[in-house]
Image (cartoon, rainbow, N blue to C red; front, top):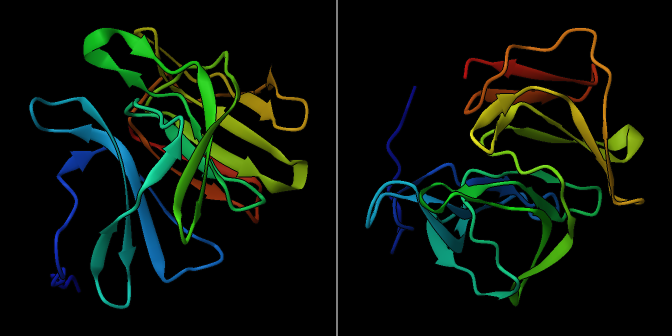
Length: 193
């Protein structure tokens, strides 16, 4: 059964495709970063960081430092150390795409961004998951440079290199789909798009 929640205080502006995650060390908080705002027009990238306290239903704007990325539609995964890694994204109206991987660490003082490494992968609206047994990030499908693809790509943080996985069968090219990481069976599930 769905229940409408009473949010206390100021809420973040409306948006689509934000990054949302739970801190593994503090599961009582949900974080949200960026996405595309609807104002002044659709697909306007925003770069704000918010935290929702799940016990009080109160949003809090979190200050950020470092090189804050301003690209919407990217994808993220949480690494072994609890840091958020942000891959891809773009500014559709300007024809620009992210060419870097960024990390975000959140502490009591706020969020600290840093550019982790250059990226040859500039997909938007795709999937990225952390493959813990192999200590790597796997990306599939998405939209880049106006083209769709579903080639499985791997980023190895220790060597900061990209490689392409051989896939016996891949889904049809797509973007903007739903996905889930089945950790137990070591697979990425893609639906719709």
